[in-house]
Image 1 (cartoon, rainbow, N blue to C red):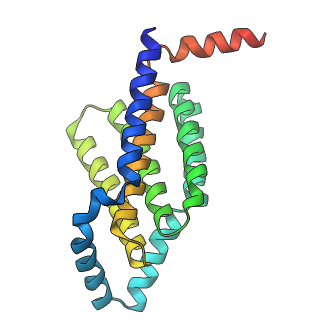
Image 2: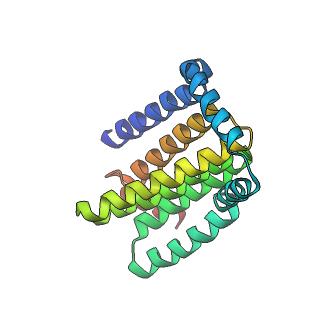
Length: 195
């Protein structure tokens, strides 16, 4: 009973965040901010900036993030972190499904999932503020860079925020479900039924 309540709370949170992420009226006040960012990018548009924005967008596409996930998976297997490996598998499944978003929201989706997962993994393994702060700042910087590249290539600020909010909600649900107290019992029950 207790496990099903946890699952229901996480699923309910996911539904609420998904509704927020897809409701464009919730971000109506950000149109002015989007116009200012767009004007600044138009003024500073040049070949070098386009090259860097393209590189950021391509670095956060499905293939490079999947390669990074493979390296992380090997490291997790080497360390014997099976629960985190299952969590990484769930996050990468979400990333591949969301890869259909394409440009310009796709890189933001990928950056939020990949860098958010690494940040959560580091936070779970270290209590030191000297480790957590730089990791959180780096993850945020990568997500912001992916969002800026999406806006640069004709995306809208609300699209970037919605993709990031939805990816963050899915990331929290994946990590929460895998680390829920009843997760191992459920896996053992499923495994014993297959015998």
